[in-house]
Length: 116
Length: 113
Image (cartoon, rainbow over all chains, first blue to last red; front, side, top):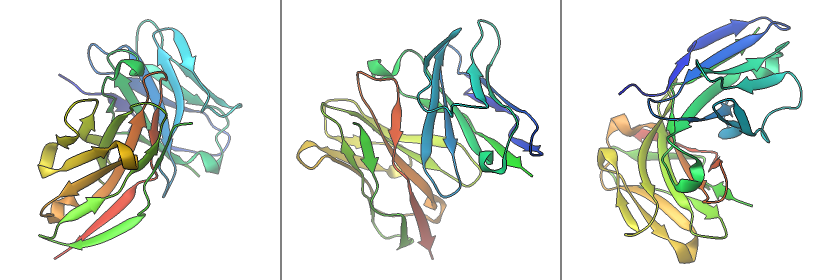
């Protein structure tokens, strides 16, 4: 049973370019979460999605960041016009159903974005 | 509001010594509690979790944690540390009304020979 799959694992972008990070949840999981981990810091919640719906985006920066989880295909975290401060590890996680049911959340290996 | 505090930023222990990593949480009801481990350049691996029932939970790699409601704590323990345990450890709390995990800032563990 494949775990949460993220790609690319490492991504280098120049300032002003766009970064697209992809996440396929575990088989049977329909809830996806994105977290950001800055150097020497903990994990910060960004967004929670179900298929075709954004449930909670309270942790997303107001500009340049967007996320989607289409009916078919992986979830995508998109960062437009990247700046050096966007350099971080971005982790995707999934659960079988909503977190409120006490399910365990499983993490992908992360995507490391470096902005040069 | 939910929150998690890991008071120790960095801990160094000798191989074979016992280990306790502290975690305190803030949550109005009974929380769901988790410990994750992260090796450099890797994702987070679940060590153990507490949902209900026995307050002492066993996890993988010989780790255990004890939920103490009176102290709002969920400390992680291991009786004898191995060099391969060197990593970053995160405590997390989730509530039954929200859709978020709240993570502590992590404790970095160094194991010396």
